[in-house]
Length: 116
Figure 1 (tube, rainbow, N blue to C red):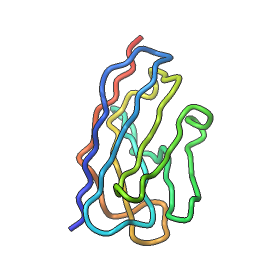
Figure 2 (cartoon, rainbow, N blue to C red; figure 1 turned 90 degrees about the horizontal axis):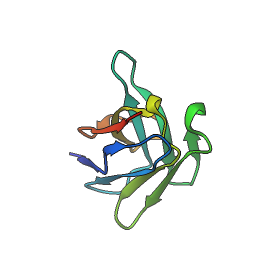
Figure 3 (cartoon, rainbow, N blue to C red; figure 1 turned 45 degrees about the horizontal axis):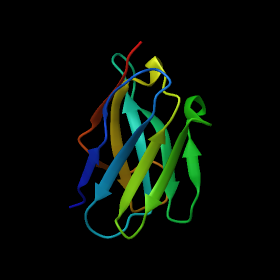
């Protein structure tokens, strides 16, 4: 019954910034994160955060992206800075009541396009 709703996607220039938001229904989840899928590529983990504060970032986004949570709002955010064309993808919110980074709950996705 968990629902995840993303927002904040759009078109930006290389070097620009974008902030994605994901709001969850129901009780607070343990792990919330972001995945992305570019055309012709597999879906990959971008960043995730647990209720205890552990964070996991893809090597390609370390130093550029920051994941955070607002527990009262049951939301997770992804601040994306210094965006590159290769960041272009559909970004999906993901959540899990368990302890694994990847969970069974997914949002519908939001398109992020970084133009050149």
